[in-house]
Amino acid sequence: MNVVRSEGRTFPTHRCLVPASEFRHRSFSFSLANGDWFYFAGVWRPAIEDWPEAYAILTIEANADLAPFHDRQMAVLTRDQRLAWLDGLLPEAEILRSLPAGTFRVKRHSIDPVQATLAV
Image 1 (tube, helix red, strand yellow):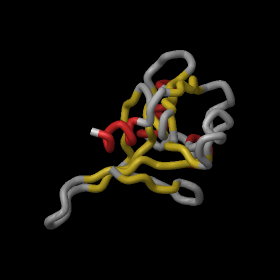
Image 2 (cartoon, helix red, strand yellow):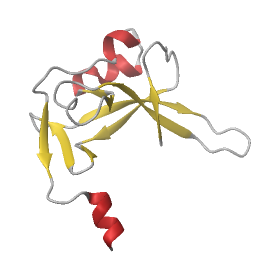
Image 3 (cartoon, rainbow, N blue to C red):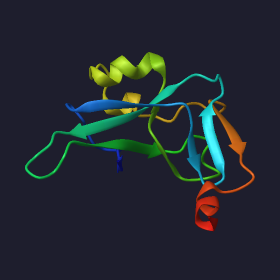
């Protein structure tokens, strides 16, 4: 999996969704405040020659909830946005946008999962 900046780009084909319930950055996890699942907006590439199928998650400027932790975030789509993304019903600039402040619940973990893995 890769991440790709979305600003200024169009993705007329090969759109995909990556379902998720949370994502992490260092010792923090982020989930929707309403507890619902969401999707990362992505694009995929078919297998070619010796390279298998692959996908990338698109990134956007971080919303107000995530900005204290990082300047970018993966493009999160809510359930009601998923078909608009897959079917190309809205221009990229309209759908690949930061969600409003208060959308994400931020949870601090007592230990950074990466550091915990390194300590083993």
